[in-house]
Length: 118
Image 1 (cartoon, one colour):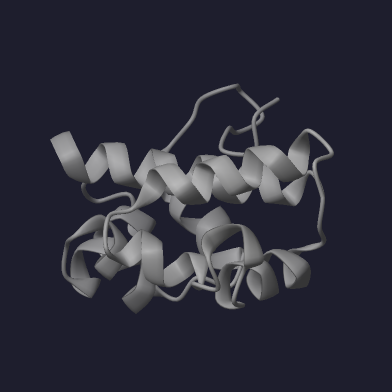
Image 2: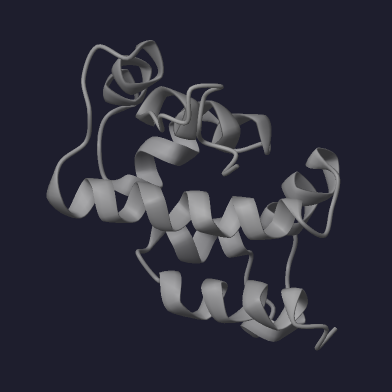
C-alpha cells in the first residue's frame, strides 16, 4: 500500500501533503517548492481543493522523493537529509534545489541511495 492511500485504497492530496509535512518540510517550504501560496497548501491539507498541472507534478515528485527517503531513513532522518548539504548535489541542500524547480538531480541522488550507491 502506498503511503498516500487510505484503508480503502484511495489516494488523496491531503494525505500526500500530510506525509510531506511529516517528513519535516514546512508548509512554507512546500508552497515554495510547488509554486503556490502557503494558504493553497492548507486547502490541499484540508481536502478542500486539489492541485492542477505543473503544481500537481511538483507535488507528486516531492512526494516521490519523501517516499523513497522513508524507505531508508526514519522521519527525522528524512528531514535532515532534505535540509543538509549533500555531496551528490555539489554541496547544495536538496530543499533549496527543489525550491528552484531542480527536481532531477535530487531524484537522482535519492535513487542512488535507494540502489545502495551510498
